Length: 197
Length: 197
Image (cartoon, rainbow over all chains, first blue to last red; front, side):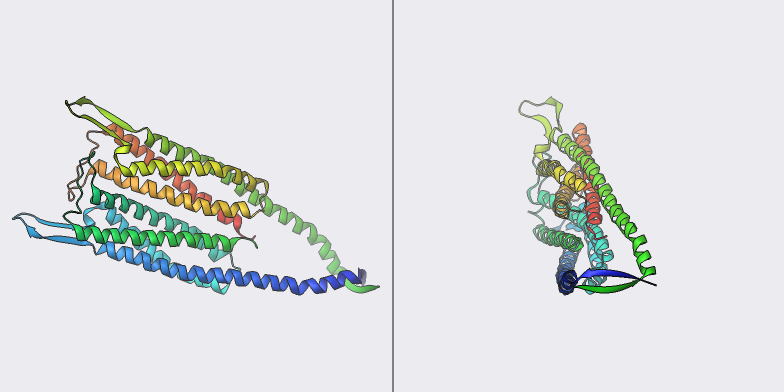
């Protein structure tokens, strides 16, 4: 038993011509998404470097002054200020997350059309960006205070005494801001890769 | 001129049954995206409220103590601390952006399948989230210092003297964190709405 369908010849010809075009278009989109995925991977490596540098610089910062009284030796370390402790913990978490996210980034390169890894990456990247920005901003507020002090609150700057400590802490803050900017670009890349066309 | 195509009857019957199903499925996806867009709009209204509350609370915070010497009156205001000034400016920018983003959110409700407004919203939301988090975290670091002081840096807490000021400032920080959490959900919603299926 069979049904007969009549198709005009012109329509059939159109179908033959457009079919390969659609195929080529889909392939071109895949290449564009693959490029985005590779850029994502490279940017992720850069963000790991910046985040690790920030963690290490802050974690090893500390300075002991070359003079001391009988009862007290003057030293400053990141663990004297709770904000800097938070900075080290938060940036360590961000670094760890970024390293663990590399396999998902590789999956996105191999399968540019897959949505799952992309969606996971954009959501976790947003969380990491928030943590990173919070650490960087809080540390910046304290570093500014350490440099300039505040006359109204009667807080004196400590960078006159602990110049080396302040310098390494400032370096760590700059590195964490670089990591934050890279994370922002990672989110934008994921958003571009998630869209339909 | 015509081409003859033979279609087995069973296949034709299957095609007839599945066609309406596919149509219903496509409609369901549109409804799902429309629901996400409406949720986006409501969440955006909540974020505006929280951000405006944070801005207003911090901007009007200030306390004058009821005693004074001949030359000096004791008062504390948000403009005494640069971090709180940054907080007010940043939260005002975030509030303004959120209000301006409402039309785009409405466009996303009317046209759930449109990609342009979604992509614009997710990128600008990311920028707003970063600004909001930076303001909240920096203010938190200073508020913590105002409450507890820091023995190592020889900074004394000022909340013993300026209790009301500290309370309104803490309230503003909490409101800004609520706005930040809402912005994070907005980004996740946009990411879900951007995906293919």
